Length: 294
Image 1 (tube, rainbow, N blue to C red):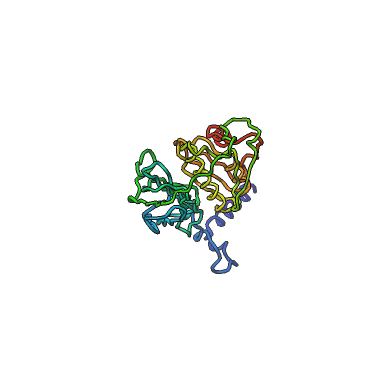
Image 2: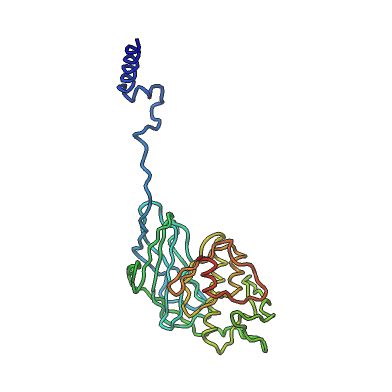
């Protein structure tokens, strides 16, 4: 009897297994998803590429804006952002405002009113997609960097250079790490940029003036970056400190800042800017590395 029951169960199981899959699909409306229509998930691991870089003009006056259009492709997720950087024969830089929009392919470079005259050559470009893959191009490719698609240059004309703001008499700029009680004094111009009096350089110190103008430009770009988005800056290696007013601007605008400095990348995420500290004027790059790259 047991053998008959076992045999019957085996026959029933065999009948079930031999039935066509369509038998289970009875009652399913035509056109509904089936296993045949399921598409495999594709992981995007390939970085986008840049094929062309165009300038709205090759000559610009100090204080004006020049537009750079970048053309490129991405295989799956789509391009998320671009940026470019130019360096002059005089050692000065021009950097683009980062774009985080796969549709918009034009970035802008605001030429400071302090920007000295000269020819500025394209030295680097970056592009990244929505999956986080990025590709970097350089005029002098090395490592993972690739060669730029072509050479470009911008001529800046500044016939009437603006004198950098002078330091009030008897109030010389404090050095990084100074505990001068006046360091917390601050002012704001009509555009809403955060400024600290103690950050203003001695006009005779050309290196300090260069750094001051660089960060003034940076604050302007931070204010024009959408909340929560990322601004990328190529910081000259001789600039070793980030002014407290820049950190405060980041905090107020809730913008992320990615600094490419001396071969390193330091990212200050949106909402993670350091709070204002009464006696601090600068944040050294080494300190920022410890805070944000730990």
